[in-house]
Image: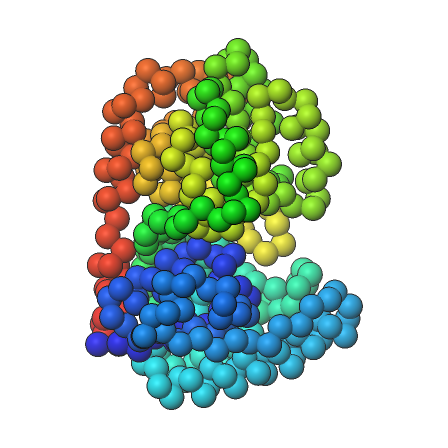
Length: 378
């Protein structure tokens, strides 16, 4: 059995809740975990960093967007990353990479090891360097040579297998939180939470990044048309390119309130009072990922909302539509105010049953068993 797992991640795991979930899963199941990432030890959750089976080794971080800084990151930092991995793999059974970028940074040293290759996104190809349109990194070869490939959603597993001609169907490890624990309320959040908890209207809550692929305009209009009985609260970071449009959204809708960004798991504190959760995914093209990426989305939010018994509203994407219809935990519809308004009314009529269904959905996924099966020698 593979009891010693080295997790390699280029970047900060604090921006990737599924990696925190994986580490907790492994530690609870008595695995020895070594993490190599761009974090600092004091920023890692205490329940992870204080575990006797956990070791952490940082990758040197460089900042800046100049050509010199970018080249330094690409060559010097990657070289140090590979050196640390090679050294620490002397005491590990398996290396578990977490992202496409991590695979590109480590390169061919991965061929030496028993490699679990996890993909956070659905992608047909990956650029050789940032911004490259035509020069591609051969990530499909790494997937074919990996010991196991892991994706967060079932449809993605089948698509990825076909695109990359994989010998086996990837394992599906959903982006479900391993534990729904927000911890204590920090002083910096007390004022915001007090204001939020005094809200008398029914709260429609959006947790997540605000960007073009997460359009909230129709939801805000639908809330306005419900006549003041509902309100839309937004918690998360706003992409720089969307700051101006987002300011207009909040200004133009009296029932919309932006509370700010709060890093995981503190964002869970807002779920205790939420009435409906919002998942506004819009399929589209970008340089890194397939246009199918959002269509077969695999948000951890679907588990966060359901873990608190919060029914959901989503857009017409199959990654939401399939679990919503199977478990009766929410509704998908067209991205227009009338459709959203009618779905809110339908949820209200069936609220208690849908809330109960949410807990059933959450409990239907056994993360311990899935990770155990991935690490089995087969």
